[in-house]
Length: 302
Ligand code: FE
Ligand code: FE
Ligand code: ZN
Image 1 (tube, rainbow, N blue to C red):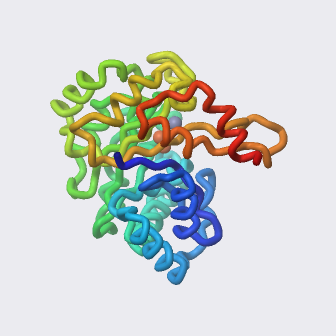
Image 2: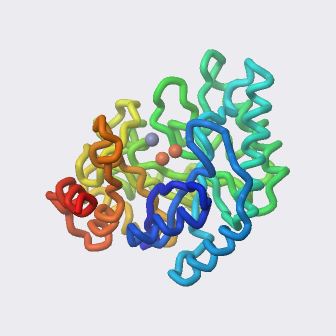
Image 3: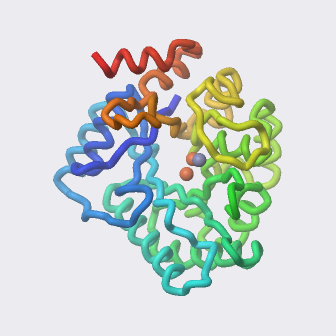
């Protein structure tokens, strides 16, 4: 099983990410090159990056399974403000350049939100932008994430994802990142995952799936909410998620947890704890842990 979680990038960049991933017993990870909410970025530190590659090699983490996530504020769908649209395009190009410097092969992207323009125009803006962006990429593939359909998000149906891919010129550099919480919230039944996958294969082609975000959902099927829950603590449930991570057709695809930290709503921000070490253990052992939240608190408070 190739499994890891979202980790931070920090002052040592990729090196910090690898160390954090190893602390969760992960064999892959996903990072943002800075804060997900903003576009303040530092140049890549070459010495630290080389150390990161070495540490990965020593611990059998394959760089080909490592995923980057573009910041949320990139919106390729809306071009009402020319300057913002061009900024999004240029920022994504810079992100891809940073990925290539670090030998990272995949960057996950939220397709965008239409906010105030017609949906079909918004989708064509995404296509136009991606075709520009990809002329600047040598070997970094953009993965369109399946979205929950909150607000005016594009990419909450497989038909929209298909339409975008169909119109991309460099098809070898486009792919899909499934997100189980988003799919549930968008109205795709994760309890019948084989049916979903067959449907995906017919429409888009299973070979386009390069990453899966593994999250439970705080909301019921088809609610278009997008609130992640810890594994086995939401409406998707442990057995369904276990079935997805062990799917024989997706064995070589990296699985990334983006579940909430324990106590994330605490006022005291020093007392919030990452769940990933314990969630990865549950999935590897196929054993649900009903004491997950307490075990995590105990482990990090000691
Ligand atoms: Fe995402
Ligand atoms: Fe996600
Ligand atoms: Zn989400």
